[in-house]
Amino acid sequence: GTIEDAVRLANKAVEHTRAKKSTVTAVFTERASNLAYARRNLATHKVVHNLSTGKSMDGMMSPHHGVYPVRELVAQRPGRKKPDMVVLGAGAIGIPLAGYALQDGKTVALVGRKRLMDLIREKGVNIPVRTAPEDVSHFDVGEQLLVYSDDDFEGLDIATGGTVIIASKTPTLDDIVKTYMGKLAHANPSLLMVQNGVNPEGRLAESLRQHGYEALIENIVGSVVIGISSVDTSGGVPTVKSELKSLNYGVWDGRELSPHLRSNVNNLFFAPLQFVVAASAEDYRKMRFHKAIMNGANVLSGLFQAKVGEVKDNPWIGYSMWAKTREALAVAKEYGSLFDEHELLKQFGVVASTLVKHHLASMGQDIRNFIASPTKDLATEIHDLDLDFVRLAREAETRMNRAYGRMMEEFTHSVNVLRHEDPEKAVAFAQRFIDMNRALVELPPIYGTGEVPAALKFFQEEYVPSAVYENLQAAKAAFLGDERAAEIAVRYEAAPDRRRKRDFTVLWMDDHIEEGVALAAQ
Image 1 (cartoon, rainbow, N blue to C red):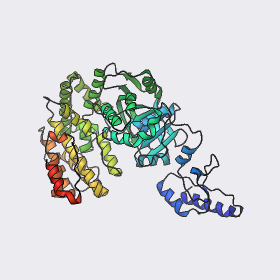
Image 2: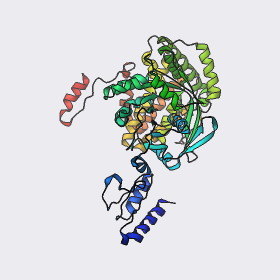
Image 3: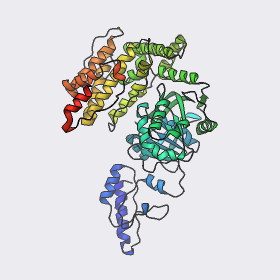
Image 4: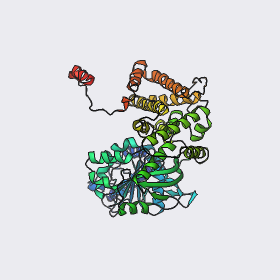
């Protein structure tokens, strides 16, 4: 029944057996609002026990007034099997991979955004059956499936020699290491990465070394996921819609994967995924570049909230996508990874028109998730997709990547500045900017943020990026004010040196402002 029913029955039980001094009443729930209600309204003269052992939880002395989520009981029950797999950053890719392991009888723990994890705790999750993708398996939280949110992961653990799937965005890898490895490193797990980008393995290794987990570097397994996947929550129960084709794994730096690591990865999954181990570092690099090139729609998906079908079918952003793909090819060649350009562009057209017609690329999903739940800063993979090409380029022409990449960086930073002041204002800013862009290329608005001007269309390559840039500046001025909007714009005008990392950070203390200004100028 409802939480009100549960609390009412609990209090009746307390009253009924008070004279016997032998009652134990427990109310277990997952939803934060229910926890708060139960704590306010439960009678205060009872002991909450672990139902499986009959002992007071955490050794607490009675009388104790407590309300506990189900997962705390599961975590504390003696003999509970530790997860074979932990998925960090569980979302569109991590959840279906976890689902295949669940269908194979393995125990899995998901760690992801609070909004989605709360929904899975409450409703469970539907995942396509590995051998019959049209059918789904339903899993509820319990013995086999544990769920933690990124702000509440008490009790997270993993079996010795288990596998951690790191499915978060590449820019968050350092936070992943700082936040979770202290709970998982003791088990010496394999670390399977499913990020996009050119060399996310190098970033993870650097972070592990920096935070004292250098011994885990040899456990890193990189992978390139081919196919598309999303999590649909519109029907109430989160449902994975997946067309994952393959997971190609290897390592960027050319070291040999140990038989133990190969076995760990192979034993996690089987059909319909087909696993291909890269034969050489060059082959694996080619896979990564190929995937990054095929992600040419990513920034366009973010700036226009456009599905790949819309991107391809729209003459203005479709041409931009084609131009970006050509530039990405040029940069890959600069880096020494050679492709058959005509074959790849032909394949790009086929894939865009058929296999991923309704796919919303990951930057578009990032922004849509932020708009739905602005509880954390917006993080996109811009540093590791388009701008990696810029960073690696020497002679290659990357005009389109520079234009769109710079705008995506500036937009992301503006959203996060606003979020720290007023999350609702940050959401409104993102919605306004996206609707302006969609009107620009004659796509219908999806957020309904009011009338937005539709500019005249020209087929020049430079026009759409310039018009989107003007939209960004107009939206920034409206939400941040002219002065602060200009400050953020200046921050991104200094191409190409704007990508250089800070050598140090100056903290301006109240009594030392002049010294801080002088030091910053140097």
